[in-house]
Length: 263
Length: 263
Image (cartoon, rainbow over all chains, first blue to last red; front, side, top):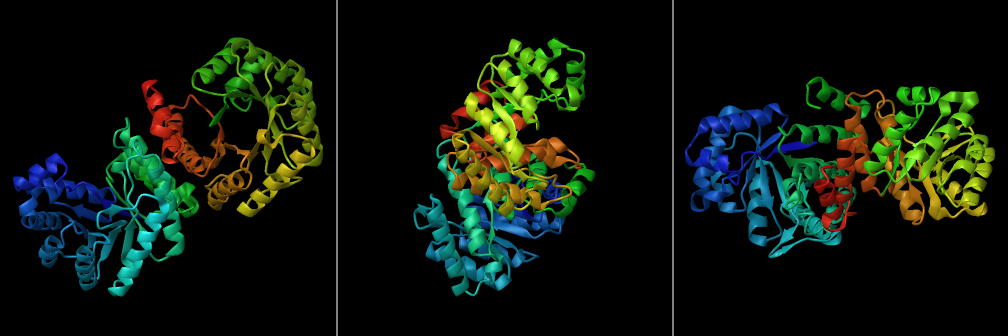
């Protein structure tokens, strides 16, 4: 299970303030707590800074890399921003993200090929986000085909079926879980990834819904997740979710997490 | 989702003591807290009293029925014990349980037919407990056939695929979850049920494993569960599990549970 730590995102107020004020100590802390909590990659996002996004993301990348030795997940919808920051990145990154929109697809895939990195592929095309299971799987199939055409190793492709808030669209839960299961079965070398915080929008006790959805998704084969690894209950649910999915032989990962005080 | 409250079971020390000492007040409490917590049926078990089982179970049934107006789940492997207590039972009960063992099967099914009650069918035959998904589904199919032959309405059949502790048999998780999904798909009017506490035997933080397994099972279609409804985190997981499984339209059940302080 690959964990991408989601905390260093400018949509969070304290992160935006730290970026604006060039508060390196705050970013160092955010990087270190996620690394200690088991993140494999750290997401970095400076999207709220619109016209200064590239410059802010460059500072963010250098600052995170000063604190920890983890690979990064470069989070921007703009190919020119990803291009601008690539020379600074120390380890082969995950690029977040491609969609089926042609301009974004070809440029970002080319960057992923060049750096031998990973890429997140969203089930989204020009003006269309996949809603049903069938649409999600169909878009996943096209993402796989386009990756292969571009010479990108699909073993490095992480497909995000995209999930809507359950409060307004209860069918999004089953559509997304069904898509995860079908994508993992049809494309065994391809990975699936999901964000969690969106699913509970508009509901009370949001973290309960988020971690419950994670358990169901892991049980359907999800092998990567964008999450806050410092959320103790979420992390414990992930470890237990791997056990009940038969994905933790002899429960060794679960028992180790217990011994490390993580359950 | 049908909840069978599991607390009034003589394998629990305080219950055995209450039965032995004819402590009606303690049993009344146990019945009332489970009724308040949302149990649809209450399990009653006096199995540790071997040669006095029927007599103890009779007292237990009368005592529980004095306290609450819920139907009971008569929990004994012995057809003669079930037969002996049936005249006392006020509401059509759930009989717990039948197996494919011929003597138990025919006698208990006949009782279930007579009282127009429900029956739990274990995926178990003479000296054999189903371990793989295929075995569980095959035994479920035979339970369905035998029920039909006996004139028992299979809409009242609750199949328990039987799950082993994950610590010693990690494959039991996927075998059981797969069986639940397949049974629900192949026999749409038949129900599935599962006990939870067994799965975590030998692991730390057992309640975390139990509730995580419940979420996965609900997501595979489980529509009945033997559980402690007063376990706040377990109940909250059940409510959230129904949401992420698309089984709580507009999340109304979840929101009601929140308003009632149950999340």
